[in-house]
Length: 173
Image (spheres, helix red, strand yellow):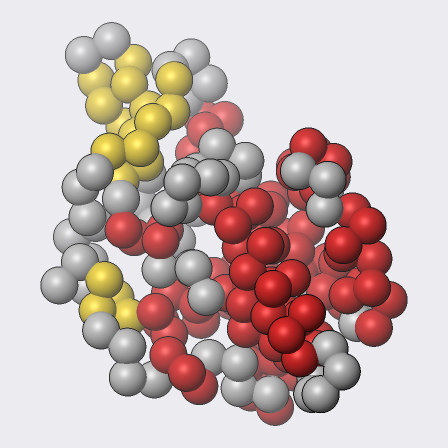
């Protein structure tokens, strides 16, 4: 597996020293973060910054809030997947002359989509994806693609990090 995207993101955003305590408590989270970065890539924009960076920052904030009073590794995962629904909030496209290629959420990694259309420049379009999806479903879909079997079971079944999303509204509604 290629972890260069993850390494580049943590290096460029100076996140390494902040992530070390998280990965010390739960080493499997490093693989989870790497796989999320490999799936989303570094160019997909969340609210204002690259989505992977925003997700890591959310995970770190959640970790920091509960590190002395609860289960910080669970809080990190909860924060990490909190913005997964942003994969549906706007359209990610690559233009090749008159042709426009649109990434369809969760059918393939964003990085594979970008590689197929390396000639064009990727961009975000302020158009909601036509699929109706909740935060919880988006988190589960991303987790299913990014986490290995045991990590998925541990965080999404045993610790149920998506429980706060149960009543969330659909994205694109």
